[in-house]
Length: 101
Image (cartoon, rainbow, N blue to C red; front, top):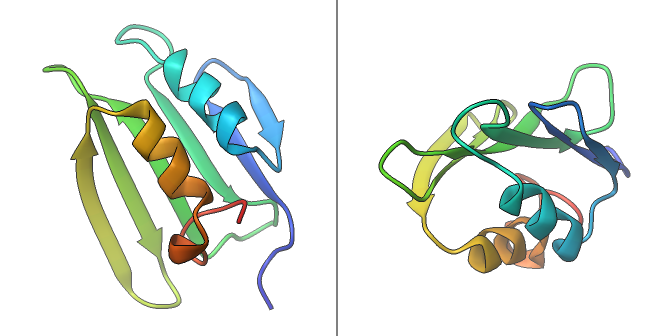
């Protein structure tokens, strides 16, 4: 059975337990290209089987990496829309490799 709770951690040490779409939007909005370059969302457990990370790209926009070891899946996409990224991370259609739905 998968974790019931999820956490979002940023490079600068911020953490939000069970983040909402709005909370993820704020965390992603706070990213920059110097000292807070990524956010990782994953189950709140000792050995999480999946994670999603959002990182700032040098050329602008964001790289989204989804990894699920139980399904042997690894997907890398890019986006320029923080709204779309936060919505996707909390969407029921992506539950299992993301969070919070």
